[in-house]
Image (cartoon, rainbow, N blue to C red; front, top):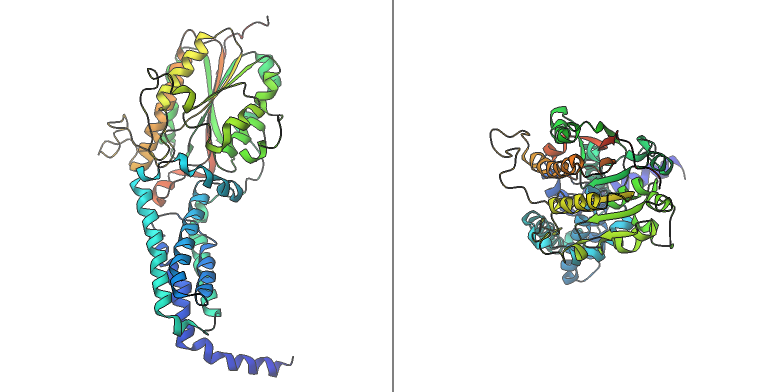
Length: 451
């Protein structure tokens, strides 16, 4: 094809590119579906790299479908848009996110006003775009698509660049809090201590040293006993909570779907169980969530306690905590763990505690110790302050367990599962991106003798 031919074709296309119908389509299908998210972008983090293109493709389909069908197509795409935002916020891989749909019945989504409002806004946006498309069908049909495509690309690029500092980046190397501290089967067998491993929901790495010290100081009662040495640091992460469990317990990137295919897996609980350790897990939510009742035994937990079994003890677990993730209260789980470790002190035990109550959306503590929301608040940002109060409760429980005179020599590791999934940009700026926090209390007492 000669240059003259190309030039002639370009000249013929210029009128259509400059026409009102073409730019009308760019506004209706390229900009309008994303306008609301662009307006809140300075205040909220909502990663949606595919959504502008999904709306554009849905618009093309809607123009060829009956008008009534448009009122179904766009609300559905709006819900997919919302689902992708949630998936990225909670660090869920696509496969795990799709699988998570089956667990929706375990959640009480109606208990969160924020979730209900966001859900309603996305669906309303879908209906609004459907109405806009139906109202402009004649002018949109036959219009040139290139400007609409360019607008969608621009929206996705702008959103991506503004949100990039807060989005998950590929970890340069694998690491875990256990590997950083040299805790493996050989180390545990040699030291002969019990292990209390606490995985704290949503505990990211607070970037302000004064804020991080709020949690560290809660472990001071344990240090005052003279039994422990405290160290702390940051670690890489990948995935959501089950990704963190794969990272720490099995020493690899992955998620729960990697442990559903076989009868057993070569993970730390399995390895130390073979060395005579009692491997125990506690979690205040349902065993059905992410099929933990199936894969926990496969990675080596010989004894597991979930909402269903623990709630039978109505005296110890009389209260419930949380909203969407309504379950047992972390403080009550902490009491149960203290009892378990001190009453069976002759057993070598690896006890894993996955906390619950700081899962977003959370329920703030009433009259908490950090005085959140007041002029005297220890952390000015209310969201970060309220979450820290929930983490403080876990750290207080750990300190109470650690200082109990009846506790046998026990190393205690506290680690976040993934960075805190905050929507508000101002709140997210209080955390070091792409990192989680860990704290290790090394017990310096002599371990139990081999018997």
